[in-house]
Length: 102
Image (cartoon, rainbow, N blue to C red; front, side, top):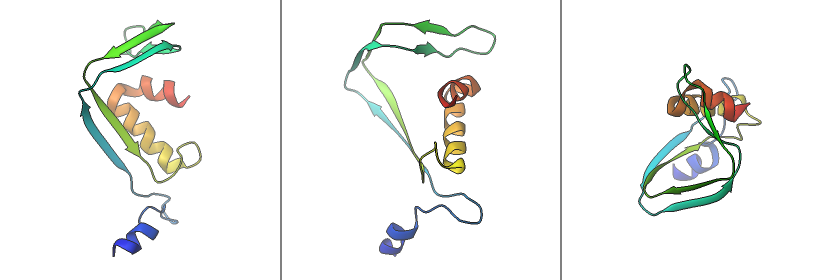
């Protein structure tokens, strides 16, 4: 059964175009630091303008990592793209999904 799943379980269903996906959340307690970030935007509710930062440095002491695993590359596969769009919308609203997905 495991071998069958490994060979076939991640494939996109040919008739519906859908397939399995997974979402993983984990709490990271180690610091995360990034510098010289460009094109950094704070997504706010629709009635408030988004803040933009250039040359930003970022330090997170504790944060939640969210990982999405899709059956195919979202840039090539419509189902994976729809899963990614729904994932981004659920985390940050339609503004975030529109900004990241163009």
